[in-house]
Length: 146
Image (cartoon, rainbow, N blue to C red):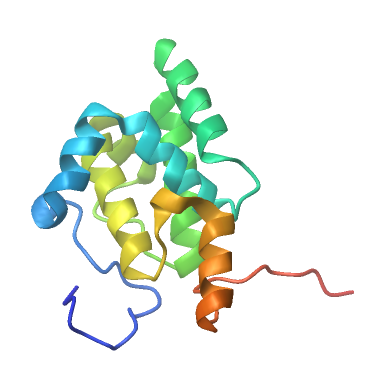
């Protein structure tokens, strides 16, 4: 995505490709060495703050010890895609997280950044920032109608 663009990202389309890891080299390197931390940040935003980044990070690490972290990562990629109606491409979420979780995490993190989030500060701090700046959140709580 062009950083100088004022046009919002298109709903239903990824803003970057899966293999554009080096668009943000620091994020790519951090993800290589600390994937559980990056996952925690993504999960907190995808769950709209119902799970903390620390708790998600610990769960991801624990599941990694029994080789099931990829499934947890895939679950949150699916949640993220649902928030923005993103296509499941170029492969299934499970395949991406079992074979290339670093590429997947960096794409998901960039996607959140390109859509107005700062995953590093968490859900609540993002909400406060938007309120302070008088902005509408990129995603809102969906309420049940009766």
